[in-house]
Image (cartoon, rainbow over all chains, first blue to last red):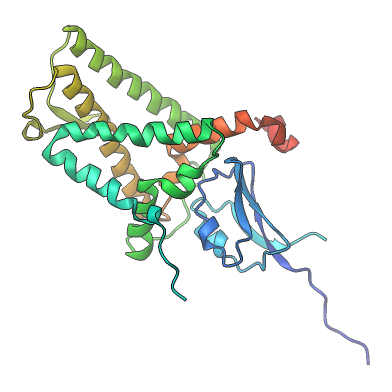
Length: 72
Length: 201
């Protein structure tokens, strides 16, 4: 019997770094400490640590963070 | 598991006290210079946006009122308010109004203008504030205090309105100090910016 389960890529947070204001609201919201502010310019996500929970997306006042299936 | 609170998590007290103290003695408004100078010094010295991220008392206050106390609708803000050019426009407007305030202070200093004991809310509404001034300082020192308190009260009111309507720290998205410190960081680290960003700016 063949395995019919579809393999889906892991969901990861993605930051619109062009628009991000680097306010840092997202940083303390991450339970995995996966998000940080890169040199005061924009937020960056460590995809190794990110589990795609979406807490940072909720914390971002401008909605510049989305959680989607990461491109492999 | 309860984490021990860091000292900077209490900085909202500074912002709240600042607004309250201005009702009793307008000269406390001079303390607001700290909120202008510290973020600029940090970003110029290479500390990035540590001020916004950790030490901003206003951000902490908005986070507390809108987050823990639930005084925010928690909705996403409209596209216009989070547009990059709106932010730059708001910064330019803010700097023009700030320069105007400095010019009025200069007029009083030079004797060409007289002290006006009013706090101007939202750049137009003149509120009588004479009870908060009964010291014997030079008139320009008081004029600067009235002007600076007007700037701080106006931005606090806008911040609270944005907090109530949208997410708690929506003010941070178009805060002129935040925009300015981010621009400093981007100028300092231009080589590290993604290529796509450089082409789009």
